[in-house]
Image (cartoon, rainbow, N blue to C red):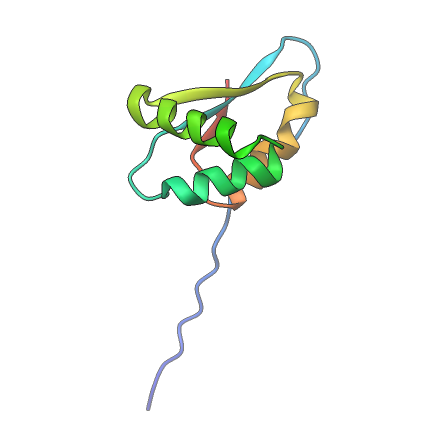
Length: 93
């Protein structure tokens, strides 16, 4: 007899609730995303050119982080959620 174990995966989703102080969407270095994946995400979702995305990927790799965007939480939360869903290590600070 075999047993089936179902696992529910819960993801943290940032919700746009605050208006006021500007926040920063920060991309962090990690040990599991490839340069190619980071570059592809920056091109597709942040609308960077290939050269811009590659330069950002190198800054993240060498300095540990890069501020992708600055603005209201309400405007940045969608970018945060998309990049997080795509596996990138991001934060709203």
